[in-house]
Amino acid sequence: MGENILVLGGGVIGLATAFELRQRGHEVTILEIATCGGQASGAAAGMLAPYSEIGEDPDDFFRFCLASLKAYPQWQQMVKSISGAAFEYTNSGSLHAVYHEADLLALQSRKQWQGAFGAESELLDREQLSKLEPELSRDVVAAMYYPEESHLFAPDYVKALEQGCRKLGVTIVEHLEKVEVIEWQADLFLKAKNGQTFTGDRLVVCSGAWSQELEDTFSIRIPVYPIRGQICAYHIPVGTVKHIVYTSQGYLVPKENGTLVNGASEDIAGFATSVTEKGIKRLTNWNRNVFPFLEKKEPFHRWAGLRPATQDGYPLIGNLQDAPHITFATGHYRNGILLSPITALTVADIVDGKQERVSISLFDPQRFT
Image 1: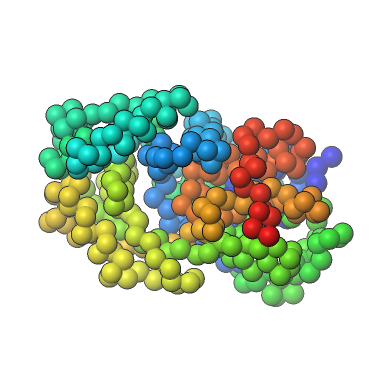
Image 2 (image 1 turned 180 degrees about the vertical axis):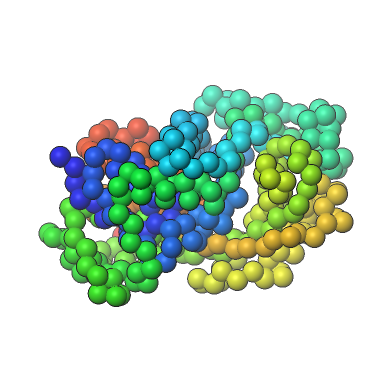
């Protein structure tokens, strides 16, 4: 018999978790202070690129990210099938580009340790790159090519998750402004600012950058902070750029609608999601060194989202030790889109009492207390 589960937060992690829990027979209600996917989730560039993003440390976080990448082909197809909604999912491959011969050793080291995890990769020189990505700057001396890495169009993916949840029978309550956990040690009782109340058997905390507000409630440290990520986008002819391109400065992602997404500058601005000239300049000052044609272009769109960053960079996933009906799944920082399938599967396994498929010991939600 399924549990009655309250999911606090309707970002990509909350939606994906509710989506999976409902398929396993649980009654699920999402409580969202604004609108689903309205913060980091809908603003993301949608990269699924753990090999490119994690270059130095093959720990359990890398394994967790890798498991999610492997799960994505089946996961995204399931979301499309259940929701009836389409969204871009492109196995483009990626290039991690460097500009100095001295950086080759780091790429070779990366290739060696990632290869032990089954990573497909190839170190390409300048001439090989000119054939694979003709518009790439000739100043790039080499790049690691990862054919497995992919990307999706985040706004449509989040909408499809929401639609899938609704079709499965998940109750979604939005515009609550604020939700307080009034009781949790024995009975579970939550109250919204408008007076609505909610009860259930289990609470799953997926409130992202707002998670720290629950520190006093649960008497634990929850060092999750909002980091503003600013992104811009260009119109380019379809096919001009074919792969995700990473450098030490940031990334560029081509979308099938002819958009080239450039991100992301980061700064601490509390919960402000305004776009600043300084933040966008951090992008436009270097992107021409990747693709010279960008020097003559102006971005047609600029936006920002709040990324929930933890003190040590790892998410908080798991039950509270003395309250196993309180489960955390928050603090995914810049990896929320990538980690949505594996987080959903992991939380559902926790609820169902199944063995964890990837170790989550690094992600103990009480590790800071």
